[in-house]
Length: 466
Image (cartoon, rainbow, N blue to C red):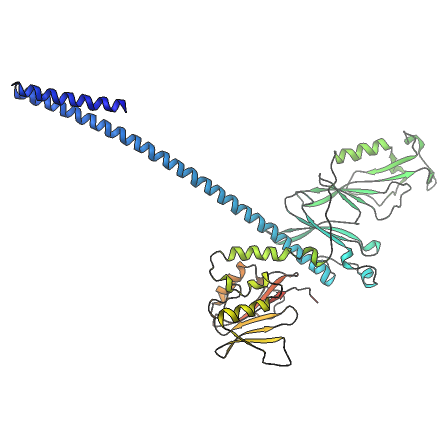
């Protein structure tokens, strides 16, 4: 600012000097020249000031733009982070939703998705399905949760613990591991599996070690060990206990197999050749200080996984409903939020849309119709889980998962897909869709004429319900 005032003062003095020379009779050309010089310098000063002001203004603008840009970047980063978190939440929920279907099949029809279950103990009354257990956790450390099924309510040969892995991108379920359910999991990807029986000649219980191999997404056998105690048997098929190999003299030697083609237990006399120190070196070399993982098993019953499917469907509904203004009048969404949605649907239709409810068949009180001006548009059947039908015409903004009588057939499919519906393999009609096979899912089917939806029916669904 001081520099700018100095320039303005100089210009003023030049102008005064020019006036003085003119008043004293100095030649016109001199005065004219002085005036021209003054004007030129003044213009230069003004231009300099203008440029200076412009530079400061530009700098100010740039600073403001920089701040705006930083804010935009921060907002964009926050938005990307939130989107990534939502995508991850939906990804995890989708996996659990699928596992809910597997568990529903096990408890509903006592069947594995890829094999058989020995149900002889259940049939004989020795315990119930809930006496078995399951867990959902990322046991192999690949960043995706697995389903561990521990089925022990069976004869010894029918007991098993299975690790299933579902990849929602590929849409495939894979069995990663199956063994007798006497397992210890470690944080280095190793599973120690104890044998169902100890056929060895020692107190040490035979173990087989498996390690998770990321490239194969499965567990590979990496070793086996059992023991021979001299106190239990001083000979093996006529062969004496090899005292010379029992360096520490504790009366125990080990059979250790380190390849993946492990023979049936303790088959050969010559395999028993390792001392306690050898065993510890082998075992500790594989474990490398790994910590045991504590698994939170749940009883094999619906209550243990009842939240899986609703959580997934509600996430989809929230996303699909972002651009909708009529979700409060969506009868389908009531299934996701109400214990018995038929009552909620009746209340909504009668109070908000003046739908008249009537039971036309006195001997069939589970059946209710909803009419407007004498036209039957809604029907409610309170049998099993209950179903609701919507036909003939659209009433206000009432929909079922966004669809209504009068919407195009293609439009109906697109809207239903957004809510997780897909073509049902159990459907007996063309336009039949479900959100999944397990407990807590929804089925919907509709008829259409000339590509326009005319009738819609919706109900809770489970393919394995009795």
